[in-house]
Amino acid sequence: MDRLSSSARVMIVSDLDHTMVDHHDSENLSLLRFNALWEAYYRHDSLLVFSTGRSPTLYKELRKEKPMLTPDITIMSVGTEITYDTSMVPDEGWVEVLNQKWDRNIVMEETSKFSELKLQAETEQRPHKVSFYVQKDKAQEVMKTLSDKLVKRGLDVKIIYSGGMDLDILPQGAGKGQALAYLHKKFKTEGKLPQNTLVCGDSGNDAELFTIPEVHGVMVSNAQEELLHWHAENAKNNPKVIHATERCASGIIQAIGHFNLGPSISPRDVMDSSDSVPENFEPGHDIVRFFLFLERWRRAEMEYSELYLAGLKALSFPSSAFVHPSGIEQSILDCTNALRSSYGDEQGKQYRVWVDQVTTTEIGSNIWLLKFNKWEISGDERRGCIATVLLSSKDLSPSEGFTWVHMHQTWVDGAGAKDHTDWVC
Ligand code: GLC
Ligand code: MG
Image 1 (tube, rainbow, N blue to C red):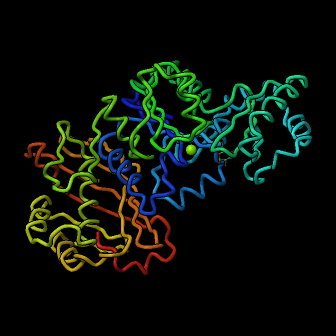
Image 2: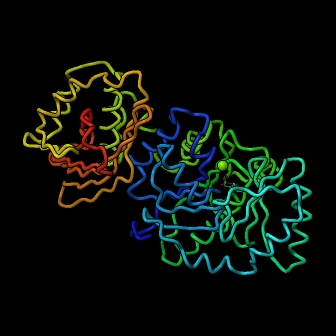
Image 3: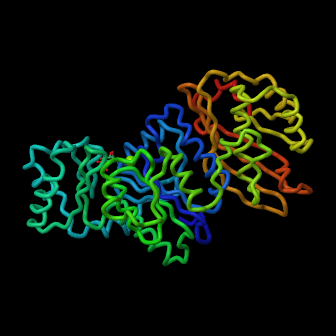
């Protein structure tokens, strides 16, 4: 994890199901609000960590279903698998820690004696995690008896109940909290302990995240009874943990504001883009703002006005070129024309645009090179491209934003891309 050369300004460690991802929000609006906030103001100097109970298989499925960002670190299978970067390189050191006092076969043997335990899908059985379903009213008793039996067999395990149905058995040293403590220790050794850490969760397996020293925590408004109960018993007087009044990702944004961790107004909450210029102007914000404009324009959520197009033209170099993902080079005039005719063409469809992994490098004085992935969904269709943009801030005050010098986009997957003739910019 070498993306940042110094301490992260903020590290967000968030659970996915019912925390970052709201399964009751079919338009994914709170997730998209978070995405825009993160890419505009945090991606360049902060760390995003997803910590989920899901195995790699189910995690990848969720990524296909929902407009999720790419995290810097992914912790899966309830803190038993830590991986880094997009290529998801596993942390071998963590595997060694988990091998202590762990014997999967003994766990299988003892659990098979409980008729109340129903084994979960094969994908969810992992080297350091054995998972079952158990009814709510049976859970406490089963956990107690099973725990005694496993101790007698010489194992030191952790049994966690989540979501009022899932029972996970892990090595004692595993779990979401222990995995975070391990990361903190690792960052500290490298002299890169994040300045602030915010942990976010909704269910039983998230409880231990809130026990890590120094972290801020948010239980989203829709948190499960078992987490609220744990909090009431163990962390009630800790001012660093709040129970948000908002659901899922909106609750995370609320906590960012509550703990003053940085900007907490998502560009998606700002209708007039000129109001949204923060004090520390970030090039990433320009990218987010531009594609949000494109979304609102095509959804006809803003009024048609030639002034917007003139404004865009004014913010581009006269000789700017935009290479469309199909390989066609467009002048700023071609782009403006394409925009003009695309006004409202996605009206009434579930059309959304978001950017992911915006990286910014100041490659010369007042010249910025940005790279990111841009995604669009329209109804059930989803497509993406890798984009490179050159921005210049020469002769401009920060409030005027940046001048767009060049943009080049390439389809993420070549397949079928030729058919996307309705791609505007
Ligand atoms: C996820 C996993 C499941 C686990 C649950 C609670 O749903 O897929 O195996 O039991 O999280 O940790
Ligand atoms: Mg959850």
